[in-house]
Image (tube, rainbow, N blue to C red; front, side):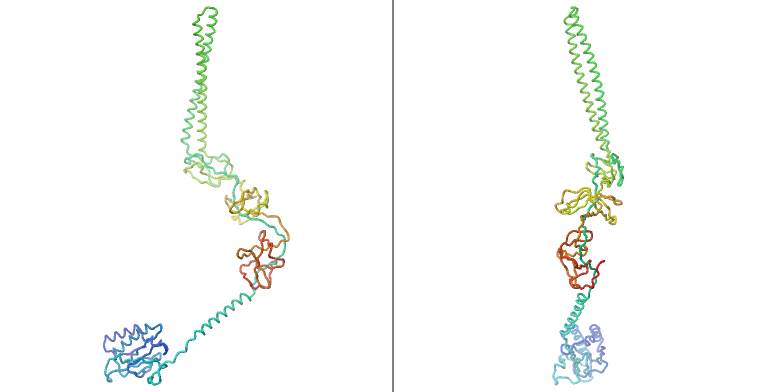
Length: 533
């Protein structure tokens, strides 16, 4: 709406424009509610509606009565705005005009015609809607928009409920009335060969972690991973300068002991010669004493010389034994030092291949720290784990089929080499070492694989594909077709053979089962059976 006003002053005009621009009263006049719950418009003089165009005439200032709606606060602000404009504007012969929403308002003017008077707010009166006033109270020429049709929330709810029921009926019809196509299989008895499967890893029965018995810095490292070694080949060397010095000292001591032994032997020979001379002199004195040509004192002196020579010979022989013992000790020391020095050179204990190198040149090695790991390729086995219930079904030399994840699960034949005699107390599994006939390309210790051992076959066994087994609350079962619909049936399983599972109880010959029941649900309709050839 556009309101044409006469201006009494620049200040009043400015405030009126600001109020109208901010609240846009024509917007709220166009969206007033019905006469029952909406606001009313009033003019001070109760005149007639303005002339045409749907707008207010010059000086017409409708005043709104607030209504209890969601726009109540904004309507109240519009009312204040219009009252302010009404009280501060000039007017003359203002007729009553129908508002855009059909509301009635009255405008009374004080003073003589042609005189500019302010409107007294006390003279403004509220006008009730036409539907609530008697015929005597209605103003002449007053027009009101007819009442809106009452809302019927129950009808809307019924429409929504009906639509939901229609949608639910359509969905249920599509789920339980339209047959689905699934791959089915009739149950029958046939030959069945059970097998046992177990995961495993590559290992070797002959392997060695090569380490040093000395502590020192690695001064030389002659091998790397994937190198082939022969027994006794040098792997690494540890700094042994101190050991070499000790060996040289022991060698010198050994040489000194040898010289001492030689000197002792020379002293012994000299003592023997002295004793022989003393004994010869004593014999001559005895002969002279018998002939009376020698004195008694000369005989005694000769005898004393013999005794002294014998003592010197005994001492010389003792010194020889002592020197020989010292020489033996020096030789033993040399051997010990040589052995220690030999330990600084680390050699391969077995023939094999280096699968791991843990230290590098310049590292400090301690006793027990592995430098490299060597395994014999001819002793590599797949150590597989099986449940303890299968231990009675295995024997040494039994044929095994091995697959490796790294070889696209290409089967490799093998034989059982040895069976473990200890069961894990937690997993209740035991180990079996299986020797493969052919190692995988670029094999590695710890490489994962799987072993399958075929057991004795049986005839007349009911078996179904493993994919058809569905568990409910931990109980196995299969989906069977009964009367054109799918029904879950619990079964008792037996051994596993390849991709099939033995069914000991729960199925009979002629029953039809769903092979791949991923999309199957209870009582699902099934089309004509399409059996697997």
